[in-house]
Image 1 (cartoon, chains in turn purple, orange):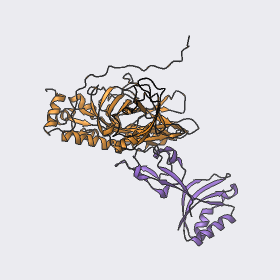
Image 2: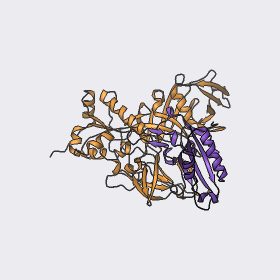
Image 3: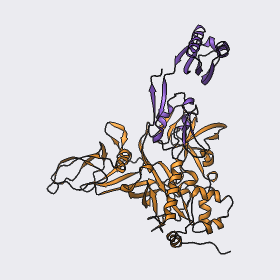
Image 4: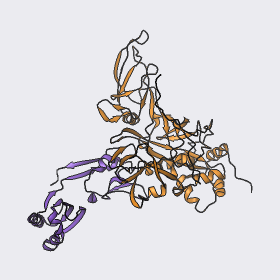
Length: 137
Length: 386
């Protein structure tokens, strides 16, 4: 299963190769979706863990032991695509690259797998077609 | 060589005979890569253009018909959106950007869209009551079938070019040109580039009062020059002004409009606006017109205005090939681009107009009058009241 978490690294943990350890020890696939890590400062990683539920639990325990706190990402962007007029107002603010214009057809495409739920599209769409859904698993 | 010359009457005769050659502005630009302006002028009769973008200066005149006893309406709302009541008894003008009391996300544009959709709209009006119009209040529903006239009249549409916009300040701006991220985080623009109507006839040789156009799916007309009409801006070698220049006032029957080409919008932090679909046919009368319609995105330049600085100064220049590619390089930084205007819809409009002309259901018009040049716009100065 795939689950997304925001990991918060205290300054002392940003020196450790924790992501490497997690991959090596627990054999999980980690997709780093967004990162802000600077030595000596609090770091943030938005990751998607792809593994069995029990394995993911082990990873989270390991992270806690290493002072890395985690927050499951329980929001998602709902896009009412059928009403889209393909203006493209949203693509300039989508740094994750989840919203892109097809260069040939000029149709807007939304890849929810790339979405990091930054929510900027909800303000950028003049038709209000993006909504944030809370809940998650 | 004898110059190629055609008249609109000759082109209409070919349209009537089902022999007209019509291309969209994108198609003719591709053709021009291998064909001379002279050949294009000989082969092609009409080039169709299109744009679908938010155009705030839009609205509709409505006449409700008289009630019994009648009322001379002095305050009017439609779905709680105030409409202008300073006309004769049951005439009104509903402006696209007017907002409902208590709901800033809903406005005149939404009322207009509802009318096009055929939905009922709640009309409330009040008056002081007169001997000839004794009624003082009325509340009822109207729709496009049960009112006399409903015609869109847009004082300023189809801007000839529009600056792209960025934000050099350190905070996010919410504007009619969309969300502008701080420190040059993105660049927004709002033109369909080589498909844009007034970029294909940059001197407005063939477009004037009375020109028949596609307006939101209906056949409409150019009523007048648009407000803030300006012809004095600098032009590039292709003859294209580098910033917002000519505009058109357009009119068409709202009852005949198509929902695919009109859409109410709300810009966060700015307000309500209306996406308007416009297509204008450009007759290829001679080689000069052939050159004009062949202009490509690379040759259509636009200035970049900084909305993060008071007065919105120009901070650079780019072109529509770069803007439509999704990313431009500005001050040695790659910057994501976004359009406020739908190129997909603009293509559909140019395509429909092409079909109408090919089928002979849309004939070209000779302008009743072309527009006088206007070298510069007036500024609104703050003057003393003495």
